[in-house]
Image 1 (cartoon, rainbow, N blue to C red):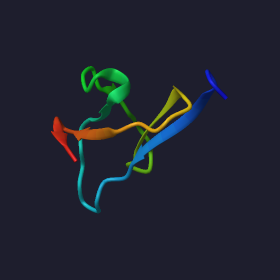
Image 2 (image 1 turned 30 degrees about the horizontal axis):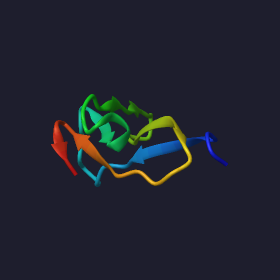
Image 3 (image 1 turned 135 degrees about the horizontal axis):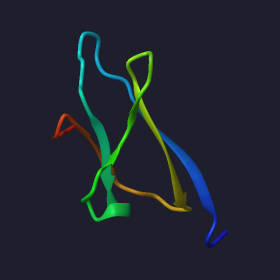
Length: 68
């Protein structure tokens, strides 16, 4: 399966009442720099599709610049 690429969807749903302005994902695939911004959806969640080679990756979400 070497070289196979998968589509992975990253979704963040804020706690009730929370209204973040921006959500991004950072991790091993970007050397923990240059976060990829998630798109805000009508239901208040944030989402983004990533295309990653087969593997296990560490990542964090940045909500308004803070790691969560």
